Structure formats: C-alpha cells, structure tokens
Image (cartoon, rainbow, N blue to C red; front, side, top):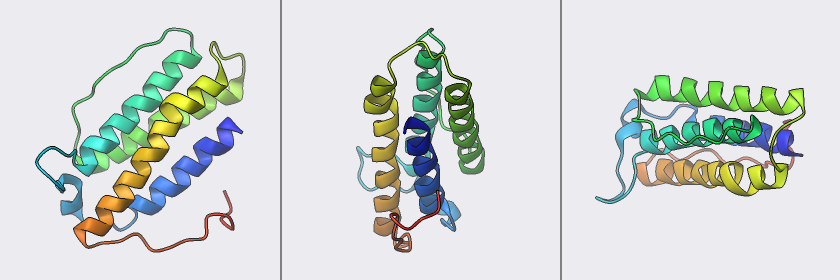
Length: 134
C-alpha cells in the first residue's frame, strides 16, 4: 500500500506540475507563504528523509531550492530512490510512520501546489482520481 501511495503521489504531483507557466515557480500567495519551488524542494527533502529512515540512518536536510526544472527532477529522483528502497524490502523502520510523516506531508504539499496553480490563474484540469490508472 505504501508503494501505491508513492505512485499516487507521483501521479497527482505530475498532474499539478504539467503545463505550469514558468513564472509559477516563484509565485508567492502572501509575504509569509512558500513559493511552489520552495514547496517542491521541501518535498524532495521529505523523500530523502523517508529514504534515510528506511535505511536506518535518519537524516534531515533543508535544501535551498534549485531552478524549477532541476527541482522537479530532484523530486522525481528522490521519490524513485525511496520507492526502489521499499521494493527491495527489509526497511529499517515502521512503514506506518513513513506514511504518517513524510509521505502524508508530501501529499499535503501536492495539494498546496495545485491550489497555488488556481490562485495563480492556471488551474489544474479536473480529474477523477478513482478512475486513474496508477
């Protein structure tokens, strides 16, 4: 179920990122809010953190955001590495904790990015996620 959740996260995030205007990366909804690229950097950090837990050596890093396209690729690579580790089995922590911490947080941030797209004036097209092939 955790690996399917990661696939769902990837699917939903890709939908939220698809055709986003280049200026969207630095859109700030308010003075104190994160930009989409800052949120995406945090999401990459969450996947790195989850992988470190799965490997039994918990480590957190607060990454400075890269350029938008590089940050998208960094997130994809971090998610893929975490999923590959889960597929290999024998992880060193409770899968429920991985879900309730970094994975659920990343799902929340995916929703934030989608919401920011709407605020920016470039909404994500609707989708029936129940019917999606993930």
